[in-house]
Length: 313
Image (cartoon, rainbow, N blue to C red; front, side, top):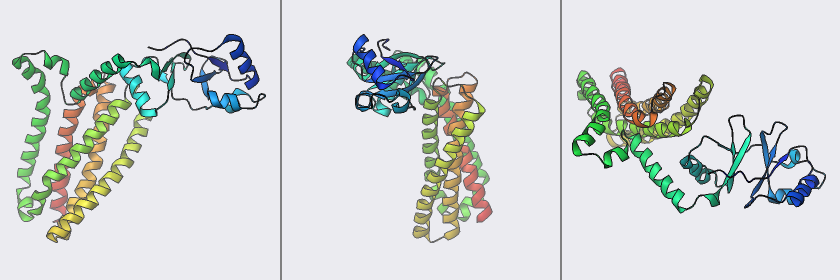
């Protein structure tokens, strides 16, 4: 999809020299941005057409260029390129090699209606993969084959649900002591599952074409931790206030709110860790991460909820 018709200048050129080259050599078709490369032909920056036209003739391109360039790796798929256009709202993106050398350009005009149709189908395929099966396989399968394709991934949900039921049985006395805990159990589990699913989606997208290492994981975990802390605090405070106003039982409201905060924090980290581990071991995180993460989130949420209730009440 990338076009090899693009205009690139070395960064030590002046504006006057760049304009002279444009007049001499012409410009690539449908040019939108001018790209700047270093002495090794690596992408160094981008100069929008308006900025090039308005700059002083003796200014160097390295002085007027935008250094932080959003680029698409040459290994990216059509779907990933479409997502870049939707996310950043740019009219064109440079395509670079692993060494950051400029390999081509994709612009918004290259994505015809047919390309977007393909993009939409691939996006739907990914949605179904997140919940545990490939839609293309299921559409053409017999009922028995569809059952075999879909059932294995439901075992993770079944296993998580059975573990939760068994755990609740061990804490029967705690639940009987404060019936309000049972009222909010579904909400606590639902919030945990929702935030885990969000984290899985964000992580799977971030892992596309990326080699996982400790530095990346620490940075992602730090960001996810901060986000989860704010989400948990906000949701916990709201539900805790509702529980206290409804039943007037301060300790129980504290348990419910605190459990939500801690379980959402844990669920976010699970949603980050499970896809990362699957990706690290060359497994497909899109298919397995969703069911496994939700099952783990349920189990750990229930443990936090009931143990905190036992300790406080």
